[in-house]
Length: 142
Image 1 (cartoon, one colour):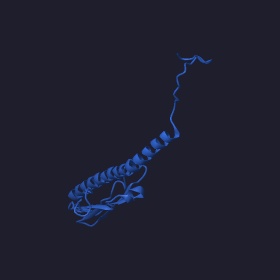
Image 2 (image 1 turned 180 degrees about the vertical axis):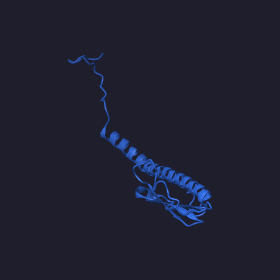
Image 3 (image 1 turned 90 degrees about the vertical axis):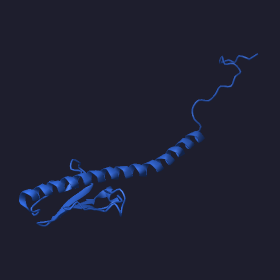
Image 4 (image 1 turned 90 degrees about the horizontal axis):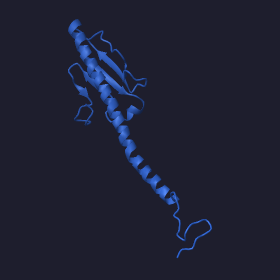
């Protein structure tokens, strides 16, 4: 037979609600470990997507240079419509430049700020479609 106490509860033990400090510390440690693994991978994917945009801009501009050459029979005088990539963004991730002669051009994309940690570094494309860094030297750049 259970005795009735003044507060109306029977003689059963009431369980405590909430988390102990140890449980909370374990959860925080697990979250910290997951963040330490996930953040570098995320940052690498962001750099990769920004590199892809710069490559797309470079290819588009090389096509425009070819059209300019078709009309004028020279690359001399061709200018880039914009000197940063991405074109729509307010923060430049790559600075684009062009060097040309009458019969050749080279478009260069130089990484800026956090993008400078990208494994591919400075990328180029020329009138013959030669791209650097080459796949043989750094995998996945082009």
